[in-house]
Length: 126
Image (tube, rainbow, N blue to C red; front, top):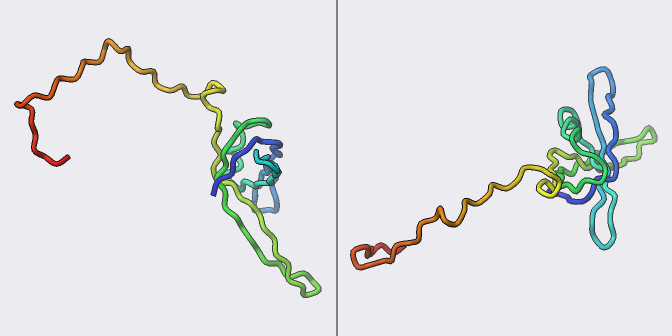
């Protein structure tokens, strides 16, 4: 799945526990009639993907929806959802000075097409 919008906030990377688990959160604001503020988490090595982005940028984020079950000490079962990002790309690369499109060669470098005469007739169906 993918979501698009503008980056509202990027949190610093946080490390949890002795095993070095890393998580970084970004808030993406969608652009629709009723904008949504989606908290998307990037974990482990994916945290570094956010280093080159900042608030206000238009992006597309590839996500996975995650759900988990938890039983509290009173025996009640609770369910939690999270959105995990695994790829992010800018939507305004060319406008923001990103990779430019390859220029077309000048028109005088193209040769005109030859007319299709009887000697060029081909009976192939394609």
